[in-house]
Length: 300
Image (cartoon, rainbow, N blue to C red; front, top):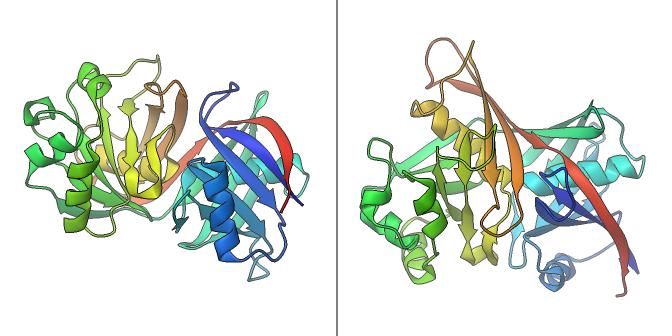
């Protein structure tokens, strides 16, 4: 029997954000069994929390979508920290999670009645600029004219690569329908890209900087309500291409996501640059709040 917690991540209200199941100290499960359990839950991701491989780290965290194990991911990292905090297994401050991409520092602070949890991501890698803008738009059932004229379609990663598509208007964002046939053709030409991430600077909610959506058919995710691993690259893209201006070398960005699928999510992004150039991004942090939804036992 395996116990788990259910957490909604990147929200301060039940039934918002991105749902997560967290299995703490699940024993000696095989990778195949972990993948089978992830398929059974059919959430964007679930996590398994294990003892660390190195004593200076806090826990090892393995993250699974319904189809693959991830190198790292945002809402599973943050939700796992929240679950461990609820159990009294970690305390506010900084902890270190071993993930497949390396060690992820996670900071836990009290923010009024809520606990704010943030993860430090790797500095961004800016990959290919996609010349076929019409093809990228077609993946989303949009026209090239729906894309922001002076901003590129580009692959960016802080550990997990996504293709970012700048969209002019909120109405175009709402019209998006993923064309999996076009996506699989694109993914075959750009190996290693995990998903497609359209965004617009037109937003629905007060206080938001950017309106976001994410689709990852190959991961078994039709549409993700909140994507922390894409939010660090998103913030890096916005700063690098001048869509958000840092103030004293820091850009504070709020991404709203999941609204179209009725799972509204709020993701806090902090991008720090060095000197006067936005080409020198030296720190990427992504965070938010969580809500405990319940617990259960899996009989296997």
